[in-house]
Amino acid sequence: MIKLHDVPSSQLDNGDAGQEGKHQEADIRLDPNWTPAPSCFCPNSTAATRFLQAELDLSARLRMLTFGETVRYIYDPLDYAWNTHRCYVETYCHGGQNVLFLGMNPGPFGMAQTGVPFGEVKFVRDWLKITGEVGRPAVEHPKRRITGLACTQSEVSGARFWGFFQELCGEPGNFFRHCFVHNLCPLVFMGESGKNLTPPELPAAERDTLLSHCDTTLCQVVTALGVSLVIGVGKVAEQRARRALSEAGFSIRVEGIMHPSPRNPLANKGWASVVRTKLEELGVLSMLTK
Image (cartoon, rainbow, N blue to C red; front, side, top):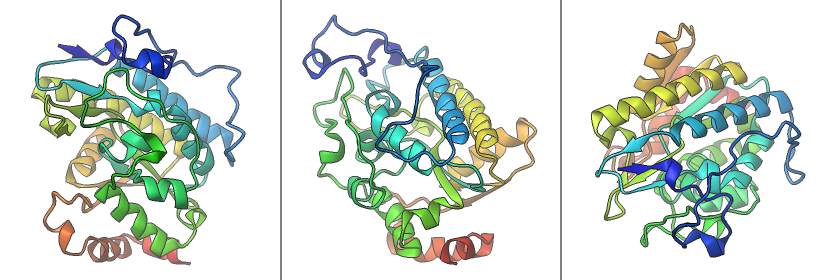
């Protein structure tokens, strides 16, 4: 059995990260004296703070879960990539955004490296201008090392996602004026070989327990941001959001767009064109092109 609680990393320096017996509980409580990082502009501290608090509460609950032999490695970017993640939220999360793009969970060369949803390094560093130190999980798969903003491996899904909105909007502010991007689940799961495991690929009981916690946080996030439209990136995220919000009594519109993953054959045949058409149908395209 593996438990995320067993492998925290944010309070380990690089020298301790690979040494057995030196793991310690990470303090994931939001400091009551916490203030935004000076390198990042926080346009609405209330929205950003509530969002971050909801994420930290989720991270605390997920640390208590255990997973069977299918899962051999768990990475939590909200722990070791907290600096860059917080910079992303403080810079771009603010009141008045009415569209939330919702992914499922981090990719190994996206948010796992950068702390930003769909966080392909080039776009995070050069377009979103995210800065900050990225640490390392206490236990890493040798084929899935975390190198942060220095990572040279491209994340196809993230490059397609942010590349589309860069071309459409020009400047990040034109996108984030109306929209924000979030992942339902913050964890990365891997098998013994280093193969990425998405939450739907986990054993049913483990998956359901995991996602029930994530559903609760999604409701908190939607409340904190005040969005009126959730767009699931991929069918699984769309269906999960619709179910979670409906069962919680939210009267919020939930739609979906095709996932940009290269594992999706249709996405390899012109994802940007398909998504542009869908966003036009949903009335979102006009917000981003004005």
